Image (cartoon, rainbow, N blue to C red; front, side, top):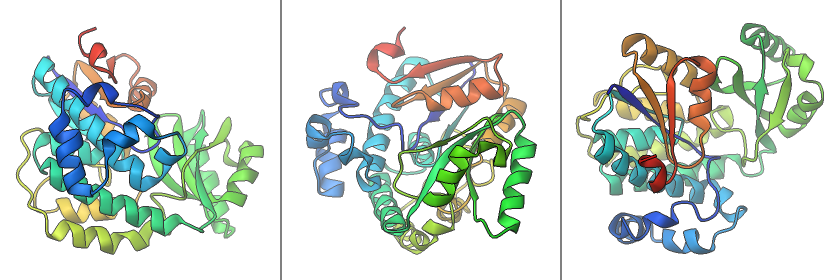
Length: 302
């Protein structure tokens, strides 16, 4: 069966997620994780509350490790997919499942990325909001109009046919929440994030990530991975540069969905990892497709 695997990014975390995997993957989730990062994921799974796991430097390695282990289980059951994609952080999961990165190396990179991103947004008084619209082109034009008036609004994610995610100052986001018509949108929903990710606010994180990537060996992946920054296939030659640029560029997830649909036309799209957010994005973009959500061991065989 032709299928595409999709991995979620930050925001999908919830307390206790992946607890069932600790017994199945103790080496990856306890031994390798502790050795690579110097802190206990087992403790976070057992004791972490919603506030503590929201921090970027905790959430990103946590989501990655859990999604990776679920991914291994899905590949055992379904065989290799036709392609993989991931939303922001989820791109690292896709690349590691494919074989571009070693699991321990990916953890180290993600840790540096998370720490650098968290540092960049602290005290920035910025945030993000989902914009729900029935006319995407009109909304994009309204954002251009705001920017021409020196009201800075950045498009962080192109998620699907009816949703983008914007970043701006918290003051601007609060105004737009109450005045969604200013964006030609139905609703503007502030997100529970630490700051304006995938915008120029996090550009200071790029040098640290670039340095971390320099010391990491990359191998040719065995499964095609379409990348966030340009919706094109990953390759060894440009992978590091594109991951660094992903930090402050828009996540082109909608473009990735449409390109895969055009080039591969898979029978099924499979969300793998906490939550179900990528499944919703596909459903809104190509509603005729079969969509599956794998966020527990039980769901793999249902």
